Length: 212
Ligand SMILES: [Zn+2]
Picture 1 (cartoon, protein in one colour):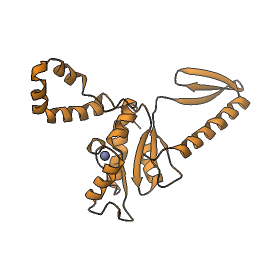
Picture 2 (cartoon, protein in one colour; picture 1 turned 180 degrees about the vertical axis):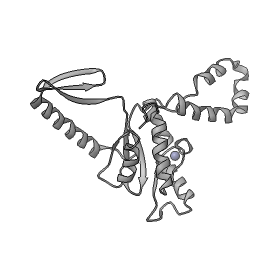
Picture 3 (tube, protein in one colour; picture 1 turned 120 degrees about the horizontal axis):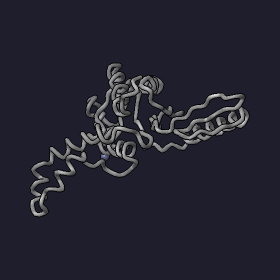
Picture 4 (cartoon, protein in one colour; picture 1 turned 30 degrees about the vertical axis):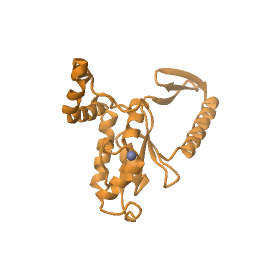
């Protein structure tokens, strides 16, 4: 695992591995929601939407998920800073025509913004999938990503943001928990209780996960 990689690069590397193993995927900005996504996957494997091949392996997410995960649900990801500066210089009475003429540039720039300025996970990323959930999770984890595997085959796999770095280390018979930059010193007994509680909360969160 390369510490210099962005979350997007890690995810891309994992998806690339899975594509090599026969998974079908597509860029998230090419589909707006899960309905459109399944329709597009069906089109790509040349099968009816309601009769996908039994052995189909696929993993993907959609534009709304992407904006939620990388821009904290701030809606559609805006253009790059450089592009916003260009937009600022367009006079109002020319704006409509300019926007029409540059529709493709805007689309391309929005993708560029996702790949560069919005490359760090801020919220959970929900992955739609068919195939082997453990295989998908293993590919993502091999890139250093944190992944929650659903119990239920119809629910999404979830890639979690990395910002909350959680580490525990023993110090003089006590346990120091490091959560991001904060340190909390606990007795070993309290640390065990807390870890139990956190594991419980994680299981509950997994059970309550919406199927987007
Ligand atoms: Zn849609």
